[in-house]
Image (cartoon, rainbow, N blue to C red; front, top):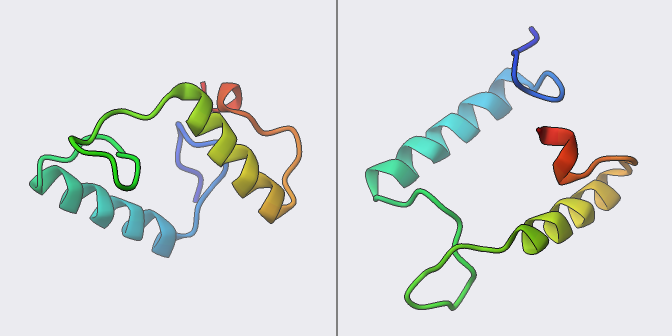
Length: 71
């Protein structure tokens, strides 16, 4: 099943897990990802997001993926 708005179709279990995670964060008032140990929690930079995405893609063996790909 292809979900429009995503780069690729995710497994139903993955979509359900992400949705549950988002619901839990919203219930706590968390709408962003904070850096570990940072207080008060702040927003992470676009550079930090890009670096984390590249690391994850390297681990998965994905090439040519960047933050721009998700626009």
